[in-house]
Length: 127
Length: 391
Image 1 (cartoon, each protein chain N blue to C red):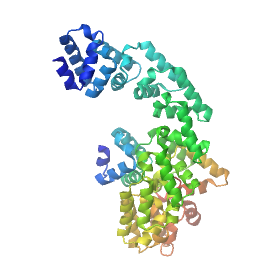
Image 2 (image 1 turned 90 degrees about the horizontal axis):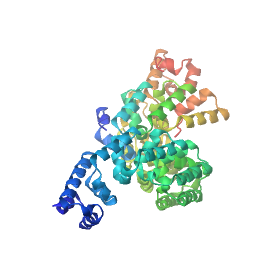
Image 3 (image 1 turned 180 degrees about the vertical axis):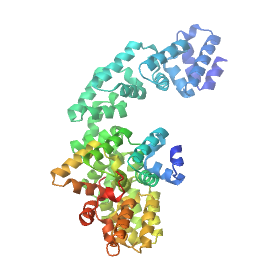
Image 4 (image 1 turned 60 degrees about the vertical axis):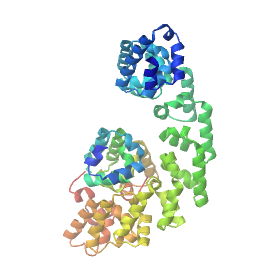
C-alpha cells in the first residue's frame, strides 16, 4: 500500500478505502501501479485518480485485464475522453466489458440513439 | 533432550509419546531422532513454515522425520517443474504432507484431469495450492460437482471462476450447494440472479444465511420491499459479505440521524447501493464536509438526494467546483441540482471559457450543465474539441 501514500493519499483516506474494500490489504503495490497506469492512459490526472480511488476503492482490487477490456469496449462503442467519464462515475470501472456491451445493445434495442447513450452514461449514473 | 527440544517447538507431551511409539521412530536412538527433527525443523522454518504448522505436519505424517532433506528438495523442484512457485510447493507440503510420497506422474495426472475440464494450468496451480486436499479426492466426484453447476445453468467460465475462487466447493457435498440455492430461491431470487450473485461472490455458498435473513427482515420492516432488496443485491452482490451485511441496519440508522426521511433513504440506497459499503464515519464526514462549505443541513440533504454518489466523492473534487461557482455567486445552484457537482471540472471550465469567448456566458450559466449532445446542438462544438482534442 506504499504506492497509495506515495500517490498522495492521506492515512485517513487510505483507512476509509480499506473500510470500504478490505481486499485492498492483500493487493500488491505492482497491481495498484497497473490500475494507476491504466487510468493515466485514458487521460486521468492525479486529482481524477484520487477521486476515483476514494469513491470506488473496489477498482483498486478489480482485475486489471477486465478493466482494460472495459476501456477497449468503451472506445469500441465510440466513447472518447474516458477520464471525464470515470471521474464523474468511478463506479463504472466495476462493470465488465461484457455487461457494458449487453447494456449498450439493450439500450439501442429500446430505441436509444448512440449519441443519447453517450450522454446517458456521461450524465446519468449506472451502477 | 529430545522431549525438551520438541516441547520447545510446540509439540505436546502426548504427541511426542505417540511419535516415539510409531515405527520406525521406536527403532531409532533418541539422539538420531533429535538430529533428524532439528535438521527438518530448521529446513522448514527457513522456508516459511511456522512452528505450529511443522508440528501439525509431523503429527499428521510422522514418517516425514525420516525423509531426507534432499528428497524434500527434489519434490519441491518437481513442483516447480509443474508450474508451482517454491512458496506454493512448501504451502502444499505443509497443508498436505502426504504429497511427499506422491510420484511426479501422480501429481501431473491430477493436474491434467483439471485441465481436461477446461482449467488453465495457472488456475490448476492456484486451486491445488489453495486446497492441496484435492490431490487426494476421487476425481469422479469433482466431475460430478462441475456437471452439477453446468446443468443448473452456469457457463463453463463461471464454474471455473467459482471453483478457482473457492476450491473448497470441490469437496463439499452437492446437498450443501443445493440447499444454498434453495435458500436464495426462497428469498425471491431468480435462477439468473443466483448464478450472477454466486459467480461474483462464490464464498456465499459457505455463508450462514441467518445474518442475511435478519438484516433483510430489518430492511423489510423499515419499508423496503422484497424487490428493492433483490435489486440492490443483484447490482452489488458483495453486499452479502458478512462485514457489509452486518452493518446494513447501522447505515439506515446513520441516514436517519443525518436527517433523511424513510422514503428518501429507500430511494437513495436503491439508486446507489454502494452507500451501504462506505463506513458510517465516511458518510457522516462527507455530509459535514458539504455542510461546512456553507450549505444548510436541509440543502445538503437535497444535494445528496439528487446525487448520492457525492457521499463517495473526494471532497477536493467537490470543493474545486464549489469554489469556482462561489466566485460566480452560483453555489446555490447545486441545492436544486446536486447532480451538477458530479460533472467533470475540465468540461465545465472548457465550456465556461468557450461561452466567455462568445460573450454568452452571462445569461447562459445553465448551459454549462447541458449534456454533450445538447451543448453540441446549441453551440456546434463537441466535447473533444472543447477539451482541446484530448481523446
